[in-house]
Length: 356
Image (cartoon, rainbow, N blue to C red; front, side):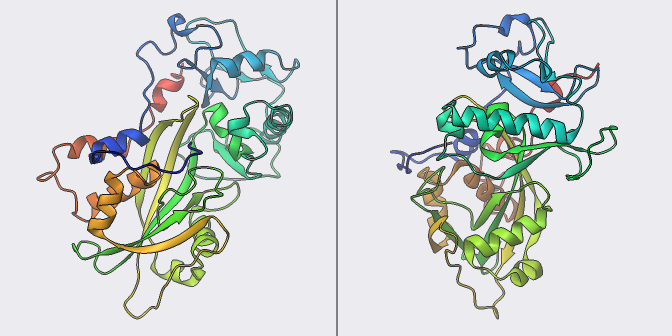
């Protein structure tokens, strides 16, 4: 994440360079071997985090070694951390075996670290979101949420929930919605796109350019309901407009490591909304997260993209829009297949903790 306003680059970035800024991490070839176990100050090595030590227990995160070292100091009965060896993994204690119990452990831990000044750039008072994000057994599976279910018989996909700001500390996969609102014909060179500037007071990426509507998906909220909520809160768009005209067009995924070397693998559900000719529409900031909206031509959007002043994942969403609507083609973009494949990867998930 970034706390600084954008600064245009001196020479235009290529589309592949923009994708690489967002999708900027790969697990090392020796991931999981004893060669990677260095001292806790090593911020380039990670350990899988699974729900339990049982064979086949799903991986839910990737932990930096300093986080693992802190978890070793926690009270008995909350975490299991074997001595470093090839294939070892961190997990909850066997007694922490339900979604409610896992959520409670992480809530107490995250709030204590926040209150004692741990990782202030991630979970300090100014960074705390007070919003819960879901974590799933299968990150590519169904989005479920059963807050009252205190059993854990392995049938559901919902594993637990945790504070949004703390997700990067634990390397869990998070989810969001991003929508491009455009006027005109999407495939036409004359199409125009509504582009917001993030507020100067945003906790992350202040003053950067964003997608027309975007936001995280909190626990308990379906994907489209999250979109409708953000439409109203960020752009003053009536929910009926979103329900009638927003079209789901796929998803992108990327493996991002922030400047503090914490991992933020993310999956974004992508929507398009073409404003109908007979529907007057002028997005307006409402909740204080957006400074202003501008209706930009395709050439203006491309220019600002290549200046590097869009939030990185928003740049990736716009590049996906260009691909889908023929503004970026195999004939005019030499890195076309590299771009497309990097926008739709599986986050190397099969390597996180090979099933045995």
